[in-house]
Every structure is written in structure tokens, then in C-alpha cells.
Image (cartoon, rainbow, N blue to C red; front, side, top):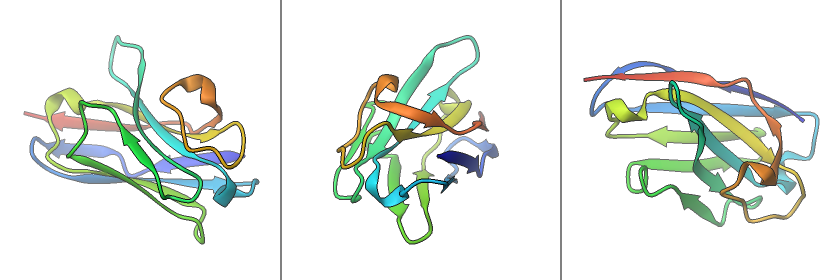
Length: 125
């Protein structure tokens, strides 16, 4: 599957952005999706995941209550709504598709086999 992430940009602290990730080439609705991020000079970290049906979501503690992951299986797209952004949210954000179908999602990169190109989010103080 090919993934195309978009929606990144420059935003002031306490602002909002919505990232999108469009999927092509596989039965999108059968696979969990995840969002990860990589800040400058740091490793890539888990942000959020959503099950194949959309019924289960999981978040990193650092974004819980501020970020919301959702999906529209009819549009083959997963979203990450980011509110109350902080400078420490600055990173390249990656979407990923799970490696096996009908999976609830994973905190680990190992649970995903397809990655988007990343979209940069910069939060100014």
C-alpha cells in the first residue's frame, strides 16, 4: 500500500492542525493505521493508532486529550486532529499501515509495514 500524508505546516502554540493520510493499493478498511513522529535529533515515537474498524484508538500519554485519530474507510483516509499544540509537538509526522489485517493497532513500529513520506509540523512558541 502507498500512503500519502499531508496537512503539516507552521502553527502557533495552542493552535490546531489536522493531518491526513490517504492510502492507495490495498484494502484500507481491513488494516489498522498508526501515526508516529520524529523530532529533530530524536528517534521516531508512537503517537496514535486506530483499529481497522475505527472502534479502538490508543494514544501516547504526551498527546492524550489533545490529539484525536479517526478514519474514513470510504475515502481510504486516516486523520490526526491535533489541538492545543505545544512547541514540543514539533516533528515530522508519519502515517503507517498495519502489516496484517483485522488488527487493533500497535504502539510499535514493527506492527506496520507501509509508511508515508512524512509531513512536517512546526509549532512556534
